Image 1 (cartoon, rainbow, N blue to C red):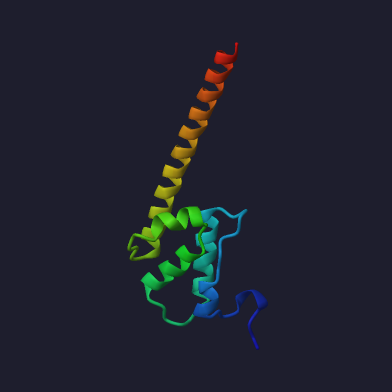
Image 2 (image 1 turned 90 degrees about the vertical axis):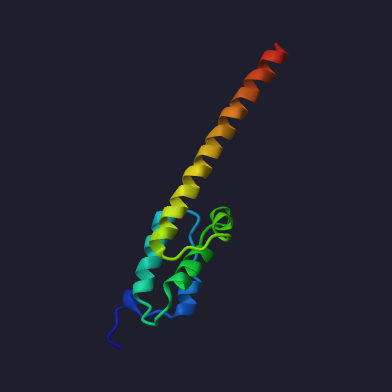
Length: 110
């Protein structure tokens, strides 16, 4: 065949099996998914591509998206970024509350 190893055509089934890696940012995963999607020459409706991409996200992000209808990849990216921001804010509030509880405990012990 005349294809380079890095540029093989992939099937929708293979595309659906793509998962985000633990060391990979969500943006990197979504960009990798888009690049792979470009190598899938089977017509797949956009909402199905979104479902495939969501399926490869980490559970903590995926569970926030399952109840929503996302019509295209752009909307998915926007929603994922919103979920990440909310998660970061929540983590930051937890860290502050944890530090406050440690300080209170130390004060009570002294």
